[in-house]
Length: 305
Image (cartoon, rainbow, N blue to C red; front, side, top):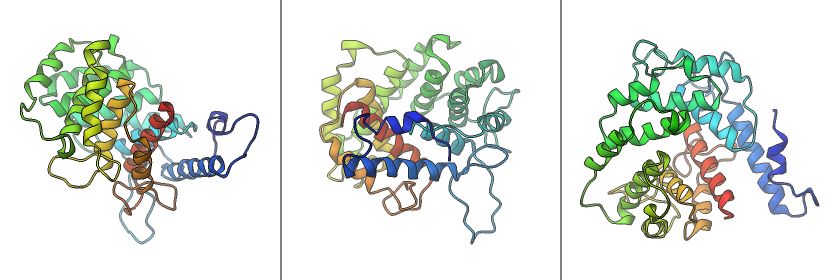
């Protein structure tokens, strides 16, 4: 397993390698997670969603979604991406030059996968001219708020200033898709507020005092459930994907959640002995759950929480 020096230095003070058990345990936990992600690597390029199940006869194939999540999880853990050139080649195989979209191998391009592909390409340092029509595909096919929300992540990864179309079009689309009767913050309302806030801030459509960070954070705070996470409308329990959306808004607003310790507890409930994370407490580890947990933890670390 190859790790960057930055991974160790992020956790080890120069004056003492392991003065406390807490620091030692944090290092071990992060190393275990990195090792688990490395275990998803396909030898010919790309990453798998989950480890190989020896009891299954199913043919395993690498996934574009899994590759994007794995590459970013490794980055946020301070670890190197092994065989990056192979993974870059796999990502480019998922690009359809005719439409400009990205798809899973053998599938059809769509908005979500194209956004995922752009993010993976950006993380792997693939030049724009290798997937030149990707943003045009998004412009032509984004029809809902969820489309432009994930599309905003792609534009951010591509470079907002280099976006080849007017982002005000997406702002108008998003505003027109707003539900005027939002559910209560603890019934999915925080999920929507967090998603919309992140969308606006990622594209630079909302800045400074216009973002009203304290007021928006107060709404997000009211949506936090006793288990430490946030939920979808109509769901009693929190889920890690919604928690990820809400935490991204906090991060972009540069505001700390009211009960950050509870968020840590929520993430810990998703961690497994193999070093990975599930998308539900006690569920099997998968790359999506691991990416969400690693990223949220990174944000909490940056907040000093």
